[in-house]
Amino acid sequence: MKILTGNDLKTGDVVWWDGADWVRDVNASADVGDRADEIAAREEAERRVNVPYAIDAERTDDGIRPAHIKDRVRALGPTVRMDLTRRPDDANAADWVV
Image (tube, rainbow, N blue to C red; front, top):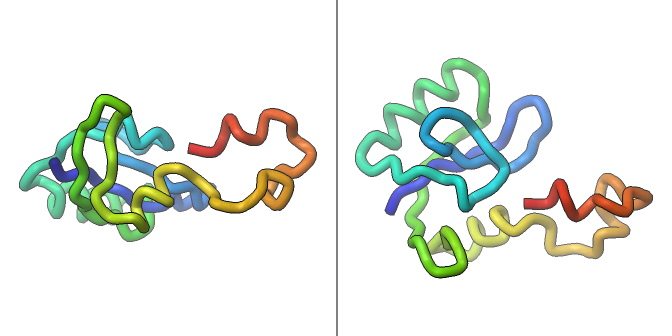
């Protein structure tokens, strides 16, 4: 399957195309097939997302798994300790990590 990813222009968050809008949960991603370039160009022109691009992924029992390690890291969130994130004093900080 092909899914779209990019970064939200307002927050910088990693986002995924769900078929109608950009979301932070990779598991909500829609298979864009051969429409990836068309959707990416439209969304970037509307200044909703920065540099959207298509990636290969597969749907597994655990959810959608990007094929490339870089995109798996982007999907799972920071690989650093939570106390080093933007919200070190927020006990619920993990909730905003995809």
